[in-house]
Length: 632
Image 1 (cartoon, helix red, strand yellow):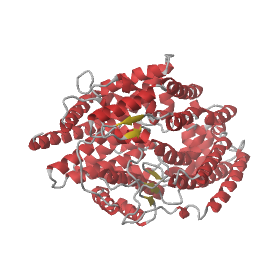
Image 2 (cartoon, rainbow, N blue to C red; image 1 turned 180 degrees about the vertical axis):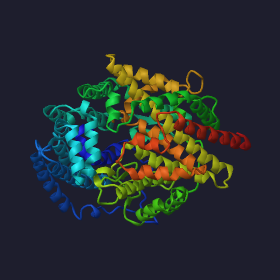
Image 3 (cartoon, one colour; image 1 turned 45 degrees about the vertical axis):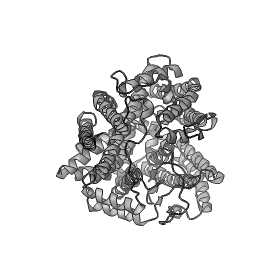
Image 4 (tube, rainbow, N blue to C red; image 1 turned 30 degrees about the vertical axis):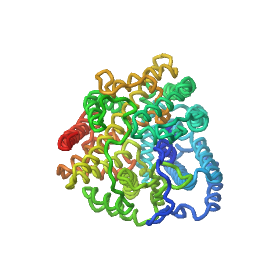
């Protein structure tokens, strides 16, 4: 986000929730339920707009309202009253634009094959782009007015209180704000600078001729991304190797193209950082949320220092799979199984019981959500895969998209997304529109804490060894995937930017070499833990996270902070629940890093990461004992 976007950070959050998160969600691997005894639960979008005609009327109205915003240019410093009028008008347009965009996004995700739905989404994006261009004057003009005068306006006009955080944030970034004309150029260039992401999406989804592989069963499968996700986890080891060899062999032929695409994206980040006088692209990326870059670097340091625990987990997987050695294609098959199925009603009850430490205010909001038509639950043809929560429409409740297939992982995802939803409800309840929209840095913490508490709830029960081992395995795999794997991605992203900033060539070949080094380090190749075939190091080209500008590290910080909160609650820390709820209630009224630090979670220190790894080791200790009893 650029500085002028502080006046519309809420709509940016809406775009992130419905675009970025959905884009990186894992594809659904099970077919839609043709009929389900619970019924096909769908959300009710009429709470946003009663009809598509009403939506279209609003879209056209907003285009006109955005044109009118130019009348404030040159007048923000006239008086406190003129600043309030402008801020209120801009905020109102932001709020209405977010609601308009969200309707198009949600309705489009019901069936991605529907051309009219995708056309509405394209129209909504155009309005959003127009809003960005129309408000590009705000930050440079406010800085020209000066901090002293703005502070005087805030003191003189009570109505500006709800805009104070945004105004102060713009002033905070004065050294990184350009003049009015230059800010306009940067705003106009935003669509062009987004080109690498669009090219990546086109190449990775529509342009690669997907190869075929014939499995040991005689089945011939076309290995597109969805099929790869499914067949990389098959039981037969030779088939897994074949899937890896075939899939990554195809990606390797596009190494140069994807390298050029990602190199161009990295250069746009560096261009933005240099233009705005940041020391690095990393500093520029984290500055929007005012998160110190030391958090990012401490995370990478903590993951590297705790690689022995990651390697121990991989050896545990090897034991559970009964293998003599371990290869990268052994990372995905299930080591445990659970025959039990869970209904949506089960998911609701399990979520409520496991989140009892949060107290009645939190649980009451969750029950309110369960009683409404806020979810789109089951898979169906054309529906967007994965899961997300969309809470950007301030005057309307959050919406939750799921692809519920009755497994425990679906229950975990259910709890995860409803963590986001209740976070939104608490933020909205305690803040005006201008201050309710929180950043990803706290958003993912609100969901991962729920997952940890759900896992601990299951493990607190008297279970047979096989079922207990299943839940332990799910928790450990979550730590591997969310902490170690995402931090590996974060380290790759940091290092390719460092290379480019030092003037080192950043080709596809160079990225593959670096990614191989990281794969080998994180998976213990040199230690004999897991062999990494160099042919699989092209995986970097497959990862969409790298197109979101230092975004993915927040998953790893969130599972660490969420685990620390959960451990405090479960260990009887009376202040933990209050601290946690205060973070959620704050919404976007405070910067996320000091907000969490005030709540006892300092992600620039080793403490949260130490807590996570201690839990990981404790779970592995128990898994070893169960396996001993089972004679494995």
